[in-house]
Length: 271
Image 1 (cartoon, helix red, strand yellow):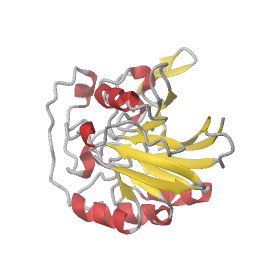
Image 2 (cartoon, rainbow, N blue to C red):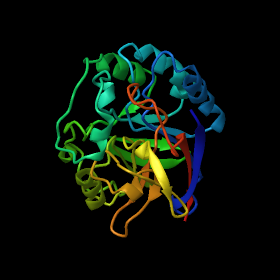
Image 3 (cartoon, one colour):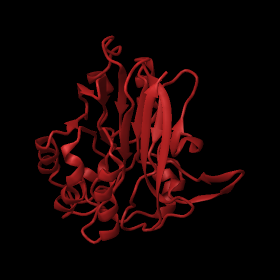
Image 4 (cartoon, rainbow, N blue to C red):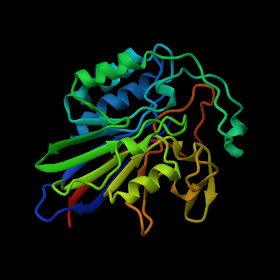
């Protein structure tokens, strides 16, 4: 399994603000046997991030909670924000891989329910903030951050109305966090004039094909256009959107083609 660090610099903070280094990762799909992936995750502390954002799907096995907490342990002393994806609620089960290429009709094959509360309590006990239908305010490097998030839109658990409303005028940075970047979530956050949104879920397509100047995903597993399946993108009437292509994969589809596992380090600087 290849791995790369995606590095982005973005002028988005008010003049005079200190730089803010954000480590964004998603879709770890961790299992106890993924020793190399666990080692990579533990090494992220060496990137010296100021803030960690996870956009869900930490787990990939019914016994992966302890594994995930061990992998994340060095990062849990830093300020962190997170939401959950479907795999944090249910264990993996086999699905026809070609079904991802068809129209999403909302049918979900759910596996064994997981002890999500145990995992949530462990993350929260170390100081990370759960943003599933929640809004929080934190200060990092002197930057006043308002963050809001939704639960997993892929399972229809999202209810943006619980966190909707114009951004706090006292904040220096307004962040939206969601697992699956469905258009309804993106549009709702855009209507509230957030600065930047973070998401995962797409795996960057997981399987990509050669395309002009690079490669193109075949699917995003949601209604996000394929060209936005990974990295930083922006439409004129929306905030920035950063989609992580993720680290792992469902254990029943253990392939990534032209789409290496990745984490992102975004350095936000003043205008």
